[in-house]
Length: 194
Image: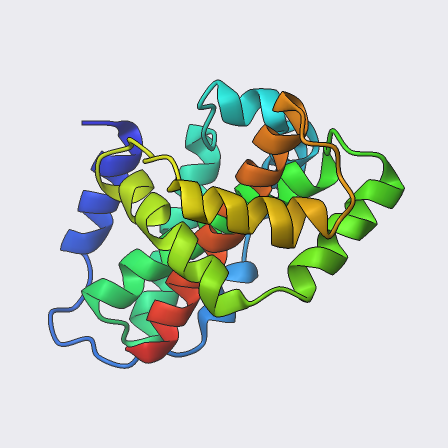
């Protein structure tokens, strides 16, 4: 069992059984100590595509800070077990996405074009494409490749609209950037629906 799994299991044992409502997700964005904030800042500032490819995940001290903060928020706002799981998933996605977004392999103009293509895309279709991969990340760890149809959609509506070359690094980066977007949006939507 990984350190993160052990920490999550411990957290879940400490949550009140009757917890219900899922609101105030933004509670987990504040309340970190200066040392925790500095660790988060350093991690985000150094996390890039090579880390994603190497399966580098969040440092243990950051995981501990997230667990502590989620526990505080869960107790304060009476979150359910499922809300806690979605809050943790959201925060992990947010941190990984922030690192990838800051430490891009793209030129600034290309990054602006990628953001524009994403903001003008069909979010429901993107979520449909990303959901199996996001769910796999938190269950088996094996991320299934997108179908040929989904790959064509992503190449046309994201990479193509952004005017990006379809190279190994660009494709890997866009895939990781999109997937971490999904790692934020899918748990956030699930949290809000609880």
